[in-house]
Length: 418
Image 1 (tube, rainbow, N blue to C red):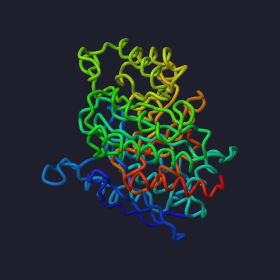
Image 2 (image 1 turned 90 degrees about the horizontal axis):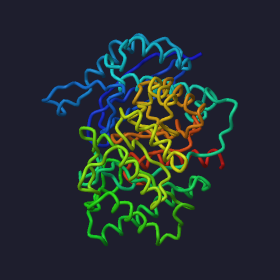
Image 3 (image 1 turned 45 degrees about the horizontal axis):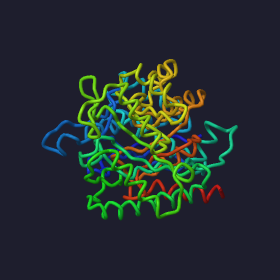
Image 4 (image 1 turned 120 degrees about the vertical axis):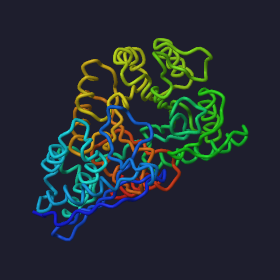
């Protein structure tokens, strides 16, 4: 079996211009795995934490030289000589060496770069694309039949936008009956139409962190209406060919027990906000609602799912944080019927797959996601296919770091002859 001969990390920039980690793992077979990790702007307090330098004189404190040094001087010697195909063993060692409840010692960014690079190196050793390697390793009894349906974030608000929209993401979701190539075409066509729609309304057409437009609209309802207007010229039919979705990211507008959004002068109580979401589902046929309430509002989430879950995916992101303990609690409380999966929220590939398997056993929908601070690394696209995700969320069909993922899915679709 192969052995790790060298581990080397360095500092690079992500799509927001912030530092992040790129790690290269070399094997005695001559194969390499290269992993660069993303970073989120809107992060749950329950996520595993990143290790940053906190040096105000360099990259405004966001440098990762400390993490790089720890990888190169402490973790690399421990990994040398180990078999990268033994993913569970390596990831458990990383967890044990960190020995903190939230990966604070080495940082989830450090650990994920190593965990992910091991996957890529092992796939190279077996001469397999990463998606095939993951599928054969973790799901050998299933068939690769479909590329996950893309969820396009075409309007950015909240922490990802210009500050004038409360909801963080406004999604366009092609019907799952379409092959991926057609779904991508649909997303791109409506995205381009949306630009013209916003221009006609004399709204700003600059883009946010994830490539979606960040227009200066009056209300969140205006954003949904603009998307409907952009759909009309294409001939695609709402609630048949395409669907809308929201990532409310409710913690962004949660304040002392109430929710404050532009659509009403008075703050919303929890029950009132759920009723408002119900109105949006009725009017706009919302297919999914992500992070509709505060990440600690467990009883509210139960009510949200009980009330709306029969007609809409209730997606946990900040609530769950790709964390097995949080997911277990959510299952017991019946707070969701779908999960947004982000490997950097937990820090290792093994833990991420454990969470996916736990949710799949409950028949939850699996949505594999990027982060707002991305790189051109397309690993997450292979990961989504390899674990059999139902949906992906990679941003708008624009900006190089987003398009890299969408184009990788095109290549996998061609490879699988779907």
